[in-house]
Image 1 (tube, rainbow, N blue to C red):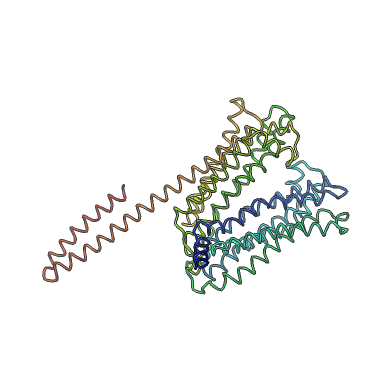
Image 2 (image 1 turned 135 degrees about the vertical axis):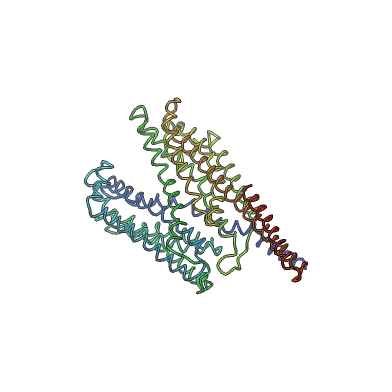
Length: 507
C-alpha cells in the first residue's frame, strides 16, 4: 500500500508542469554550455600542422563567416516550431529552407572562385596571399555546411513543438562528440601534413551530419506519422517570409554586435597598445560572460512549445503564469551564478588565470568588464520568454524594432562615452550592456502593445456577442405581430450598441 502511494506521488511529480519544463529545457541548456568545447577542438586540430598560424587564421576567418550565415538561418527552427502543423506545410517550408541553404552555398562558392572572395579576404582583412587562398578553399569546402545545418534545425524545431527537447539536445551533443572523434581519427592520417585545413572541415561535417541523421530518424518515427494530410493552417511563401525575416534580421544584429564593439573600441583607443589590450580583454571576457547568461536564450522555445496542444492536439498545455515563474527562477539562478562569480574578485581572477589562461595583469583589467557582464542575465531573462510569446502569436514583426534599437544604442554610446572619459574594454562592455537592456525594453513594450490589443479585441468581441444575444431575446419577446415596432426598436438598439463598440475601441 505504501509503495503504491509512493509510486503515485512520484508519477504526479514526474508529470508536474515545472518538471516537464525542466526536462524540456535541461538538454538544450547543457548543449548550449558545451558547444564551445567543440569549436576549441576544431581550432586545436590544426595546431600540429607545419604551417599552423596560416591554417588557423584561414580556418578561423572562413568558419566565423560561415557560422554567421548558420546563425541567421537557424531561425527557421522557429518556423518549424510555430507554423508547421501538417504534411503540406512541412513540404512547403522544407523547399523554402532548402532554397535558402542553396543560395548561401552558391554565395560561398562565388567567394571561393571569383574576385569577390579576394576583395573580402585579402583587401578587407589585409591578409597574406597564402591565408587568402587557404580561406577561399575553406569557403568552397564549407559551402554545403549551412544547408545541412539548416535542414537539421528546421526538423529540430518541429521536434521541439512536440516536446522532444531531449532528442534535440542529444543530437546537438552527438554533433560535438562526432567532431571530437573525427578529429582524433583524422590527426593520424596524412591529411594533417598534405592539406591540414581539411581536418577541421571534415570534423565539422561529421558532427553536423550525425546530428541531422539523429534528428531525421526521430522526426520520421515520432512526429511525421502524427501529421495529417489536410491543411490545418494555409502556408504561403509570403507568410513564411514575413514570419521568419524579422527573426533573421534580429539575429543578424545580435551576431554583428560583438564585432562592431571590437572594431570601434580598437579604432577609438588612444594608441595601438591600448587597442591591443582592450581587444585582448574583450576576447577573454566575452566567452566567459556568455557562458553564465547565454543559456537563458533557451527560454525562447518554451512558450511556443507549451503554449498550445501541438501537432496532434495531445500535448500538455502549461499556463503562461507558470512559464513566467519558471523563467523567473532560471533568471534568478543565472544572476546568482553571475554575481557570485564575477563580483568576487578572487574567483573571477582565478578563473581567468587558470581556466582561460591569461596573465595576472590582463586578469586584473578584466574584472570590471566581467562585473558589467553580470547584469546581462536580467536583460536576456526578460527578452527570451517574451520573444517566444510573440513568436507563438506570429507577431515577429513586433520583434524586429528591438534589433534596430540595439545597434543604434550601441553605436550612440560607443561614440559618446569617450567624451565622458571612458575608453577601452570597459567602454565596449558598457555599451553592449546598455544595448541589451534597450533591446529587452523594446521587446517588453512590443509585448505590452500586443497584449493590450488582444484585451481590447476580446472585450469588443464579448460586447458584440452579448449584443447579438440581447437582440435575439428582444425579437423573441415582441414576436411577429409587431414587426414594424420590432424593426424600429432593433435599429435604435443597434445604433446604441455601435456607439458602445466605437467607445470601447477608442479606449
